[in-house]
Image (tube, rainbow, N blue to C red):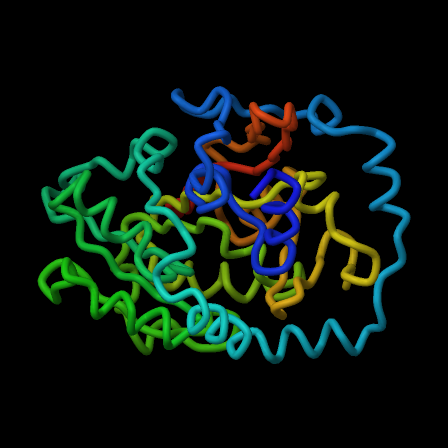
Length: 305
């Protein structure tokens, strides 16, 4: 596959994080530039985006409102179908996590206890099991909208109840306290999961997370940024709302502005330790093609009142 073919598949199935996804490793011709060190966070999106392309996607009309309701209502079914088709073979393990979020390497809490992590949108365990290898003392809860994805986690050879707990939960509407105790989690990882919903659905998720996060606890966030290459490649007819698109498989993708992420967490009592845009470049050396990826990354600490 050349770069364009793989990007087209991206829009059909799922746009990808160039740090951890199959698109980056499916050809020896593809490389990721400037990806060996922690990301340099940039405040100004204009430094990363093409003005003409940005104007084009901004001016495209949104589809009929009933489609927004449909894709929100059926999100669980679409993601379950995604994992039925792709099983455990779509995403790569996220070995870059501790580079970007060193807080994950803590072997004990300030109270001398075993640290507890909650991974939301855990998928088939591409964060759970790599992070457990980096920090074996970490206990990891993992939840996902898709029951099939959770089953894949539980069937993984490295899954054990002594170190992991996977459960199905729709954080938009289900009460996470049905699965976890209040203020029982030290760190939450939210990696390419908020983008799977509309902006109006995100506040309920953050409120849910607050219930289980300890005061002073941290949310490690990384997701798609506005004017990311995958956003620019969507064909007409896929735009549900400004910055929100649906893929041909029914899953959704929201592309964040930095200030939207910051405001989302701050209005729920979090303080940003760091937040900014991350730029990555996927390069096809044979064809001389490149795809500029844009993500938003940050750490948000729950204020201890």
